[in-house]
Length: 100
Image 1 (cartoon, helix red, strand yellow):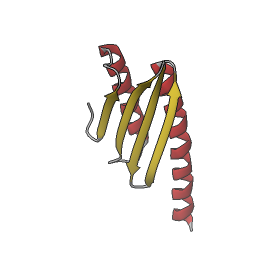
Image 2 (spheres, rainbow, N blue to C red):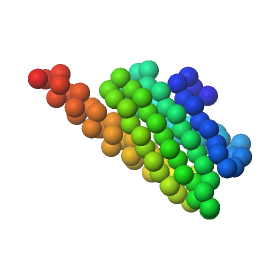
Image 3 (spheres, rainbow, N blue to C red):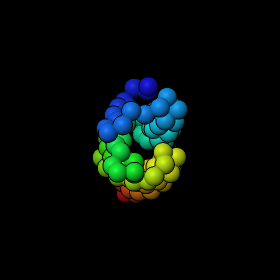
Image 4 (spheres, one colour):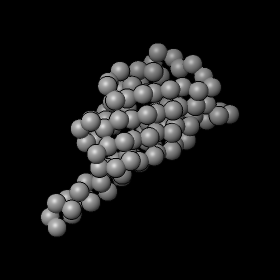
């Protein structure tokens, strides 16, 4: 696993495929964040749903991303969309501050 990433599983034991898929997805997210960003992810099973709680700490700010889906692929897609929106906000704010 990449440095600066912590993934925990609650309420289930992920298969090797699920672990690899999540590792790859979270690592890809980290690559889009400012250098040195840290990600803490908690993935838990509630009823028949997977619930993600992603906490991101970067030099541009802190972000908490909750997501809920029935399948791991859907869950990762939701998290990716939410993190992309947040990073776009951070970049816009960063650019405005630099030009001011």
